[in-house]
Image (cartoon, rainbow over all chains, first blue to last red; front, side, top):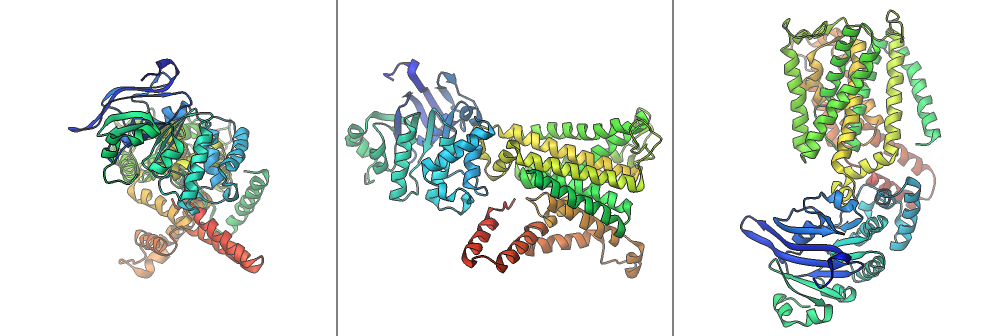
Length: 242
Length: 353
């Protein structure tokens, strides 16, 4: 909010989502600067995923305004938002199980490139995320963590300037989570990133700035150490080991 | 698709085209080729696009009617031939757009497509009166439309293409459509379409417009089915509302399941084999063996075949045969362990749509 609107990649103003009488999100303001890496945390039911769905066009906010690089995105379809150059990774690994790793990434790369360029990008991407050895395997055969990596690959191959990640660490082993942290930090060189997560260990490795949602509102926002040391935030996570 | 694959497909098709008439009647073969094209259209839409269309007959029947009505009014065949592709494709595009932009999927889509076909069936059945005329052509209601000009050498409406020549023509059109579909599936559009079948949400989140792509695939399938209807009309020389009927609508699904969804060749073989079986079951000699209470009634036999396949060969003939062949080849030579691993991978890689 301190940031000027000019260099903002994402700018949400007064975003509310109501399901019947329940407000899942209540007048949320959120600004993300270019190349910023922001973690969105909060206990279950805080509205993290709802907010994520508003950003990706899956849900239409009841009220409020969402702009991505200044473009009004309220009511836009997910493919339109993705088409702006936004890479999206959902909570449950969303990959094409029947197709090979290579084909998964090729389809992602082909969106903004010619067939020949897409072929080249696939080879590069396979190297970058370290799954070149299973390039020909059907994704459905891979373990959960490897499939998460494939989904990272599909996001990466689109060369996005904004990346939205919903619980990227879910179900990963410690080793895979470290790999994910590396990948996310590397992606941050070229793109602004929003990570929705509640694995505190993962967040500490990753973020500088954290936004805490609670009961559909923004509780606090600031540097990761300050926020996680805040007694109010601890109260919100009461009963949870952090 | 590589040039070698095209060449080998053409060679195999050419051999088949000349060998089959030695064993079977050409009129039957022409009909089976039209069925095969109809099966190919559903094999594409369902097996690769993941769109379970229960009313592929709508486009098939429409193709036949468009062809016959145009041919009667123009006195020649070729404008009708092309309209029989274009109008069903356009109709499929409109129907598809309504369904896909309306976010209809799975079972609702199957129901809507079937109902559309049955509406056309009922409508055509009610067009017996003299007021049902398009140009010079009477729609004919239940009795359908007999005696329309059939295909002829372009420029000479008297030089009809019939019997063996019609068979060759139909067969070649079938092969061309098969190659076109193969090519389409190898193109970026086709590859993304298969990705869409695997995971619609992922394709959407990659920035592709799922609705437009499904509509386009559906329209392509509609065009193929329309062409199949036109070819059938030329073989049968009469068309009736039965082309839109529930019986045929269900049969196409059985052809595809028995032949193998997720392949193109499978549905075509399924259509030809089951088409021939139905022909045999309909022979008077077979019927007379059992008299009135015929246990070999076609729908009963087809139902049994469907159940047997779903229980024992759920992936259909062609994928299963391919596996057996692959297993036999791997069993003969090569390192045991790696070959076994490769096989299971290949099996799982195969789409189960």
